[in-house]
Length: 227
Image (cartoon, rainbow, N blue to C red; front, side, top):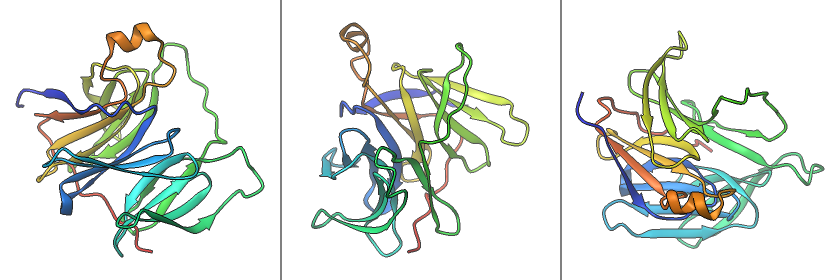
């Protein structure tokens, strides 16, 4: 296995960065900042970032077969036109639950956009890290970002065995995806909300976007919403 390298490629200072998605056609990384209510697009070639502000916490973003993107904003499934920065509602759920919102979302191989809300509560022991966003590599193994764990771990989904651990220089790792021209790079989002000044001084890249190379495995291209 080649030597693993970790670098912060974008100091975005996300309050809670999430939902990284690689767009191969533009060599760009999509991601969201949930409480800041914005969707971001980072061009890996020019290093420029474009941002679109929305009207509610945005928990996930995905590619769309028809062009543009889709996102979960508050309790709405929305279409996002990047060219004119317009948002149109495709569907709304839980209209009567004003304090609820989607927490995450992914597109499956059939092109369906799945999203989960915040009503499910899990009990965690005090020494456990919280499993957060995840992705699958080309070998069918699961990569999971561990919130408050400062790491991504590789798991065998059939046995549950941990195969690999990669530690990052920030605690609040939130999600991960594969990207790059051959999907051999991993991109990791993280958060900075809830960190005091002392912790932020020790972790100046908290809220940034990290790139990991040298993992020895490749990912697969993300699925696009078929609607």
